[in-house]
Image 1 (cartoon, rainbow, N blue to C red):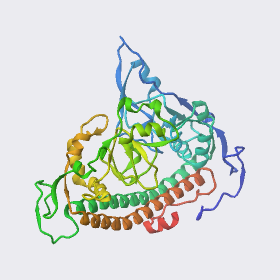
Image 2: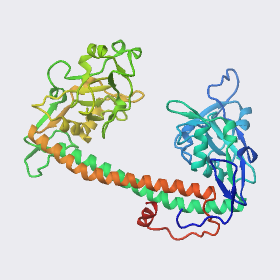
Image 3: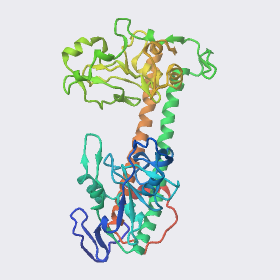
Image 4: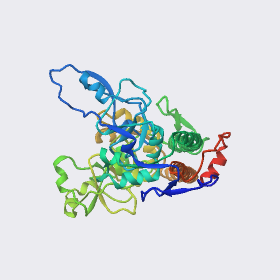
Length: 471
């Protein structure tokens, strides 16, 4: 880690994945320095007994090194259970399960809610006088700790879990308490600087995304030529649109008139889960339809014979795909030429465009516009997530320019996107590099690879300097 010297003398920690530590530090398992409190299980039967309703923290509240208290649920418990499961000031909360990036990650409880309980998938670690809770919480984010959690967890397809016993067997390097405080002071200062730069880059990304949306919405409702005659659209917030455009053109009329031009996937018994396979003709789900383009995450397929039975739901390269369900629904993309023919599911609309009326790329931009989003929202219904019906969707009325102008608009949007996408890529790469520096700095400090005992805070560095340090 540039800019910082190592300690003068080191010793073997006795832990392969931890390496050497400063000579005056101690290495021990967590159970030497802390106790662990399990949480309360949801769904206990208290029929006929008096209970109280108390806030409690779930896995969703314990994020990567911080607590998200924007939504805290309540649970009914016996008054006698309050003391047993209540959080105490300076408890270190650690998740028992989750994806590998969040598994075991610690956050310190500051008593923001009193009383407050925790569920059985969240551990509460109570440290003794030799281990500051902030040191433990910080160390859980270091690379050695992440390696330990991964190697000692039970892995499933999407999630992992770790036992209380394995948590308490975590080996960690522990300097004297006064030194813990100095290292934490250094990290708090430096991480604040790094996080400020990350936030700056994230704001830039959000502005670029807003700009992308504004480019789409303006182009597909106003066109590219501000001098053309306009007419009232009949929609107050949309305002005037080019007079030579067709107004209130039905979305259903933009599809091929042959059977299957505008469909969603099979319902109910037409496609059973037992008929899904791991090989064959791919099945397209809403999770594959992204506003940034088609990206297949699904692995389900059907046999060629089943695909022939569902030929009306067939999707071909160049077809327009739309998600019927979402928050909000209406994400649209083109099925790419690099993909094999597939089958859409019931929550995906497939539009095979009438090529003499509408350009597929233009239609996708049109469906992504703020105006299309608004009219889709108006016909969507609330359930677990918003959704619209195929019939209502076909009846949507949208402005439509002549075909040649559609192609020109789509090409213009694409050209502008090339510049913005390059900026987005640079910003995302910058965030990745900065986060790598953040992780490396934490790991170096809490494992004693750098000596920061004599460090003193300086003025906040300019963003450009921080960016250079990250690279």
